[in-house]
Length: 604
Image: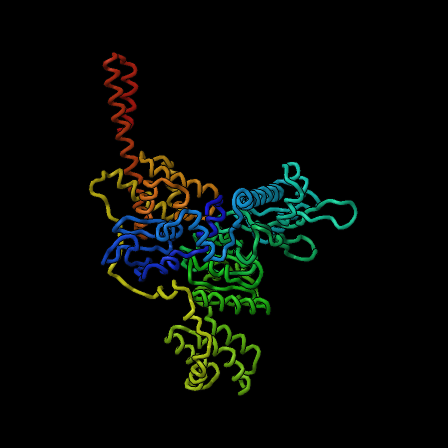
């Protein structure tokens, strides 16, 4: 089955399928350090040389050289075309792809891209108004009063929707967009009284664009500046905006999440923004209080360590418990933090700063049973037998579901101490009807079953090619580092540009990285496998992404590589100058020769 598949669908399918989970359906994988290893499914071997990286979302066989991302693997293993592999993975992830054949299907998929581009234009309109118009003065004052800096306004592309009823409508009509197309994206509403027509959905609100993980504008949230209701208003459900599939701030948090190997989930837009502004960049918000399974699966792609920092009100507690169980089922290690005095993360950081907030997150976060014990002790009288029974009844089911026996035993002892009961009594209740209890561990994703395996007999390392000169080796190491770390790419681009190699394959990969960085989308080098069909480029990409880049001395290694490249460029320029001087001698052009000699001396 063919058909047009736009980038947005491909990105969504790749993001929705964890490569370790998919490949473990075909290959018995074992954990080795940060990676997984097994016998290659593409050639016969007795010793494992097949590596899967969950961090990078790639696979690589060091025996036969096969490599790629999750889509590439399914194509090779199932002998499918690219569109067929995407559709197969879409079905696994529950992602809907229109199945109508031919032109109709292509138009539906192209409409997705048009919708994202229109939202991008709307985002730019709101952002421009906030920065430049007198009508946004109150909005600017509001953001300033909340401690939001101009740099943060720019980073999150905050905006302002004017009070006028049709400011956005008139702007977009002049750009050639019909009101019907705007209504489909929830940007305008039809009039129900008076003359027919439309009016802007968002008016007199500070606007928060909601981005996909890939950096596309899916929709908006708006906060009032007066006493209007509702206080916050989100875009309605559209073909590109589904609250259950999006997390506010994720596009800006991915690097921070991977670096900390932890994500902090909060409730509000300003909670996310204040955390990021304070340097805590591994923070996202669910759009609405309750976390969904799709949001949990999206997060589990980047980390399995989750801290929930919802508000302490009734809705926040319910959302915490629901989200906890969902994330636990996905194999995540979850803790919850209580913000003192019932404050939210935004209030706490504004008052106490990021260091104290991180102290809460990393040293005072509670396990589920501890959190539930605290909540239950607020409701029931611990000094009566009935109260103790009710507290235990709320907490014990979660202790029963703990997968780690040591953790379970510790929880039993601590609960018994808090309730002033014997550990044996609590243990008996935990073990009672255990075979009928929900055992989330046994039903978790295959990735979870593998995560505690430890097999050290296979550890792929950077293998330098002894036949290569120093310049080529430096280019190899730089490319591997750029694929591993966006900040390295940006530094290299700033210092020597992106055209520092004569290799066509290198330039192809670096050009794709540059496109990814300039568009501000999620820096996922694994996506590059879907962006080129050149086999030599794909082979080099698979090789470079499988290198283990040392975590230590990264800056020194990068500087050494840059120095080697600069010195080689200098050498080439000197050789060219010598050639030109010889030519000037033959032509008896002494003036030219002297200029060339001065340039040569300068390079020396």
